[in-house]
Image 1: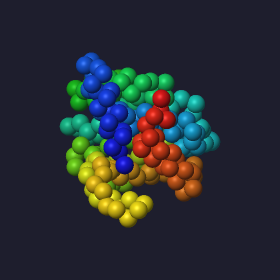
Image 2: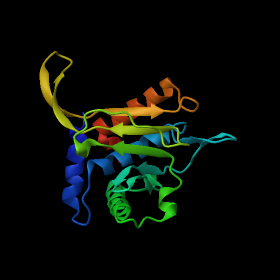
Image 3: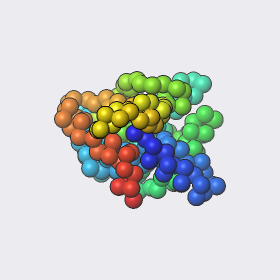
Image 4: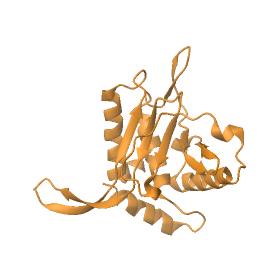
Length: 192
């Protein structure tokens, strides 16, 4: 349920006219918070060893005319949602303009692929090696939801799919990561 997340995005959007805060920026913040609690997902697989990274550097898939670029929001865990929104806007525009520097596409520890703005309801993303996992994000849409008391309510929902390299992240660890990410999205106050 992304209703509270969207409310937080709207509140942040109204608090600044310098940058357009988006759900994607909020999701980067929520993923950074969750990765800090699950260092095994903030990891890479190398020829010599598995490395769990102290830095949380989240890659954002950006579609450009030539294909796909994956710029990195470095130290996402240390940034506010507004700062993340500004970085995403800058990186995205420079990716489309062909002006990204090589270091801006290096050092990623986790990737988010968001196709929600294209109306995609569900998809599975392919891991960006050598990272441990990638999160696929669908569009937010109003859907009927059966509540605990069997009432049906219309809620704004989105689908999230985690693809994980099982050499680093087994199914139980992936499920724990998703449960905490769901908590951050549905209860965004935990991010403060």
